[in-house]
Amino acid sequence: MFYPSEKINLHTHSNYCDHAIGGIEDYVASAMASGLEVLGFTEHAPVAGDPISCNMMMHSLPSYVKDVRAAAEKYPLHIFMGGECDYEPILRNYYREELLEKNGFDYLLCSIHLYFDHEQRKMAFVSQSKDFSKYLSDYVARYCNSLESGLFLFGCHPDLFRASYLPWDENAKAAAKDIIQCAASLDIPLEINAAGLKKPQVNAPEGARCPYSTDEFFRMAKEEGVRIILSSDAHDPAIVADNSRGRAMAERLGIKPLGCTITEEGKLTL
Ligand SMILES: [Zn+2]
Ligand SMILES: [Zn+2]
Image 1: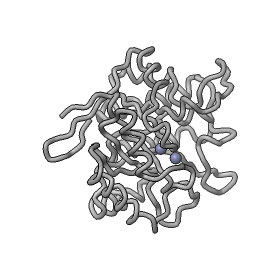
Image 2: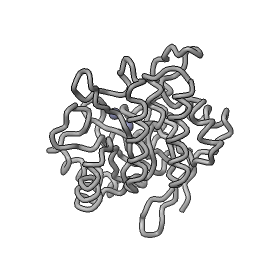
Image 3: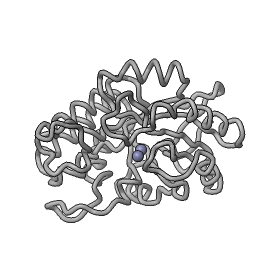
């Protein structure tokens, strides 16, 4: 059965990561009250020896699996269990074997939130870099690697680099084009992320704009024929279905956002 974009949200957090509020059932209740019919939980997937703790803790994984599965049994809503994965090639087997195979995750999403800052000699957040120009090509390579891994249903906030690399210059356009052409050639959808649209604006040389989910990037994605999905990336149950800015953006750019299909066997496809 097909569910249109307005009825789905496949990128959702909960208090299983320590920067979100609300439990699994709070998100389900809000999703149902908002008229969603398909809800996918995608907690930041745990990683052993995590250098920065924005992910779910490894010891919480069994409880996350149990809570999401219990909610799926209990409520008249299609609930899927996923994970948002910060991709590194070394983690590829872990994501496949531990999450998809052993714990039965329904799907995974990829993101690149982190990079290795050579001067500070430590991992740091892409969105908080003071000068991302040195790391732009690394970001692009890792984003494309993640898409090429074949593990992910879609790519989250692909233009996150624009939060810290501000000009829309030849470098930014080349970075965008590489990611977009990679997604197009693999036919993996990219995401317009409502959380990015709600963040405080950044002062780019071309004027103030939201830090990520930018018109320039998604105009290019549309031109290259990439399929595009909208997500709330909610970290608060109250806004689990709030995608009004993403919808307005899609409309402005002439993008028809993806819905999803659930097969008779209960499998989710885009
Ligand atoms: Zn998060
Ligand atoms: Zn997220």
